[in-house]
Amino acid sequence: MNEIAVKCDGLVKTFEDTGALRRLNLLVRKGEIMALIGPSGCGKTTLLRLITGVIPPDSGSISIGGDLVAGPGLVVPPEMRRVGMVFQNYALFPHLSVAANVAYGLQGPGRDDDVRAMLQLVRLSEHANRMPNELSGGEQQRVALARALGPQPDVLLLDEPFSNLDSEQRVQVRNEVRAILRMSGTTAIFVTHYQEEALFMGDRVAVQSQGKIEQVGTPDDVFGNPATRFVAAFMGETDFLPGEVQPEGVKTEIGMLQTNNEVRIGTHVDVAVRADDVHITPDPSSNAIVLTREFRGMVNVYRVRLPSGRFVHSLQRHTMQIAPATPVRVVMDPGHPLTCFPGTTP
Ligand code: ATP
Image (cartoon, rainbow, N blue to C red; front, side, top):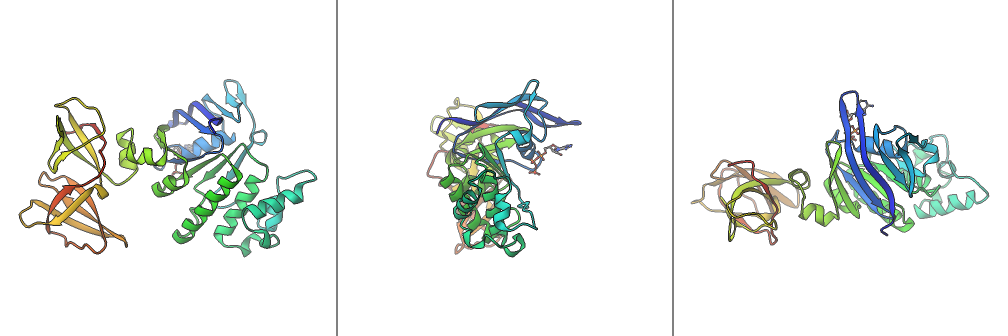
């Protein structure tokens, strides 16, 4: 499991004056699903294009399955790399049947058996003779997956593969895709904009920002122990509360908070606080005020103004309804130590 399938070392790619990748490093282990997440424009698609080989890096190197495919003086063309690709628009051949789409790119005497095996893997055997326009979006994505997996690539790249699906289909299809990748033991790099999707799909999650990987870790680690302020803010709706480190914890305006960072006493820090860490109860004597309630179905997310004028968010079950302008007592109840970062406010 610790064998390396993809190694990106110091990748740099600049378009005119835009630095899309700035010495990016990433290791993907054989058989794992790496979820790659980051804000729009941080270079996710550029990274995938470099791995497929459609564009070369300015500098740095890429190895796939132990073979160097891009490096100083070397660019192996895409067709010579064992890289599969699944796109958000499926990119199926509309005039070919499901089976013919899957057969595309397969060769040799075992081709029909391979097509049958792939269709079985994605549970579409009974639709082998249908045309793509006779399938649902989720089914089309499974055909695309079968076609990409057929040649047994060393790594499969999935670029926002569920973007064209509605939210209900999305949940079902991502479950199916994850199970298929697992069953086939495929190494995959899965790009998404959605935090929840990255945490669900990835064996590990890589958070990218401004052309670099900020943190790689298990979903629990990246969410629970963000390495940088950017990761804390990007993964989860995070507020930052300033405080001073004291022997008993970090003193903030909503009380003493425990953190998992070793920080010198007297240091000013910002504690990362998530909405589910913050509990509120109506209290007429409090100077904290509910500003808005965002109803999300199962939960309400309240925006609360603290006496200092700073804001925190509080996640409450949907049955707990508090009207805007209600004074509330704010209590931190995280049940785990919080993460803090060097303070940006005195
Ligand atoms: P999104 O999530 O919106 O798809 P992304 O993280 O995939 O974004 P990229 O598409 O890799 O980001 O783009 C990274 C940066 O490089 C952006 O600033 C983009 O405008 C720029 N860029 C990408 N391709 C080109 C190109 N062919 N020519 C010029 N600039 C480009």
